[in-house]
Each structure stands twice: as structure tokens, then as C-alpha cells.
Image (cartoon, rainbow, N blue to C red):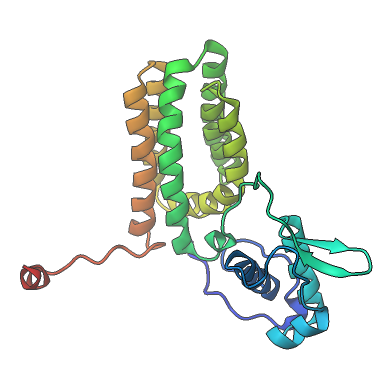
Length: 265
């Protein structure tokens, strides 16, 4: 189901953690603003961050919001505390941690961005899995696929099992880096997949299509056919986006009228 539009929260609730799509808090927004100042050089490495009172006055938020925003930037390595001196902008590390813009979780429409990244990754992962899968990994894939149907039959949404199936495909490549990337990516996939699977559960034809698409991926991998595996994975993700549009969860792209097309010539 589509999520309700985001509403403003009172400042007292602003420091609570965001849960799901469309729940950005004041602390999220302040953290994003400060991070943007750091990225564009308005706050440079070694600069002292304004005091809590100054940040409260400048951004119209409470001290709890400022503290939460600063905590988030510290956890990302953008800020550091110096005992007795305050909070300072960190010197950029030569090895930055992988992270996505938190706005990817802000709206249902942002699910499309997640699907596009999945399409780039998972098509090639499926192809490599078809080239390299061994008997043990293939058996794990078969169990993971069966687990999706078992979870849905028991009344679950199958999200965890769906993620486990795609994770097992990554492991079947024999490349540990794919396991790390997919493990990181799951925090973003989980919310996107709750929406896609929730939409698909509303229609029996959607659910049957998803089963067939998963089976096609597995069959191509079992058949050691990389090209077919790539096509099946890409088709699954493309069709998932189309199902969101058919279900009314995402807006369909506007189709120009014949008159519009003529006028552009």
C-alpha cells in the first residue's frame, strides 16, 4: 500500500529515529544541512562547529535535535569531539565508508532509485552465479526460494526470505565482496521490498508472476546459463517496477499525446 504523505512533527518528537518511508525528522534535516556545508567547504576540516545554542538559534530547533544531528554526523566520521574544546569538522579519511543519501528512504517514488541500483548490480551478480555456482550453493538457492512460498503461506510478507534468496545468489558468485555490498544494501532494500511485496500481495496474478520470475532466475543459474540469468534478473526488477505502477503505488510516466509529438517535430 502507498504510504501517507509526510507530516510535520513537533520539535519534542524530532529526535526520535525515523521509521520507514516518509518519516524524516528535524534531526535528519539538520544533519543533512550540516553535512552539505561540510561537502561544499562552508565548514572545512579543523573548523569548530558552532555551539549548541548557536545552532539552535540558527536553525530554530531544540538542543535535543542538535545533539542527535551532531551524533549522526560523528557516526559518519564527519565530526569529532575534542575534550574541553568542542566539536570540530574531521579531516576526510582516505577510505570513506560506503553510504547512501538518507533521502532514498523519504518517499515511495524513491523506491525507483533503489530498483535502478538493484538492476545494475543484480543482473551481473546473477550472470556470475550461473558461471560459478556449485552443488552446495545451488541447494541453498533452492531452499531459499522455497522459503519465500512457505513464509507467504504462513501469512508473512516474505521480505526477509526474498532478501535471503537474492543474498544466496550473491554468495553463489564466490565473490565475498558481493556479500558485503548486498549486506550493506539490504538496509535500503528492506523498505523498498516491503512496498513492492505489499503491492504484489494485493493481486494473485502479481504473486504468481513473482514466483515465475524467481524460478526463471534459479533455473538459469542451475542451467549454468549466464546470459539467461542476467536477462531473468533484469526482467524481474523491471517487472517489479511496472507492478508498482499498475498497482497505483508509483505514478506512471506521462505519455505524450499525438498532438504533443507532432508539435515537437
